[in-house]
Length: 172
Image (cartoon, rainbow, N blue to C red; front, top):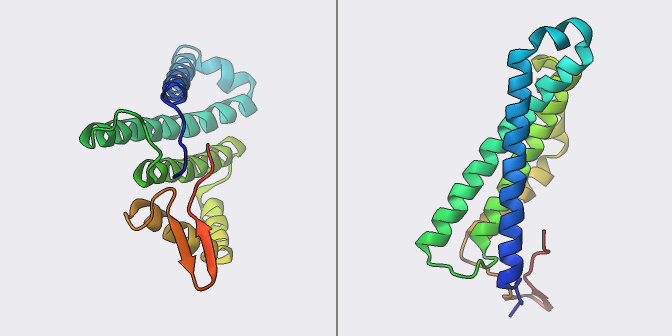
């Protein structure tokens, strides 16, 4: 069996995740406050800073929503299954991976808004990336399906033909 993190490590990770979430919310609130109270400062003087702030709005807004949904889903799942020591099971790993993929999309959208790329350019680039990485995206989706299913769990032995492997996932 794969040894998971201890309860002290889990508590530390949970506290750190909450503090990072609070820091993101405070940063987003500071951006909104600055934009509401001093709109002419950035609009008249620094166009680059204004675009950068709009990119941060897109990134932080999406990231906060994703983080909030992740916290709600994790707490619901832990409460429903009566998990006292947060274990690394497939569902929690899957939720974390899906949120990472979604956050990556918001990073790209924030950069695109910050640079000033139009929606048409983003669509053309997204279509090109989708065509070039079709197999990679398929493998990601299949991996998520396996991760959310109950077919495999951490520590399971997998044997295909003559090959035998232990199913595990690296720590985040």
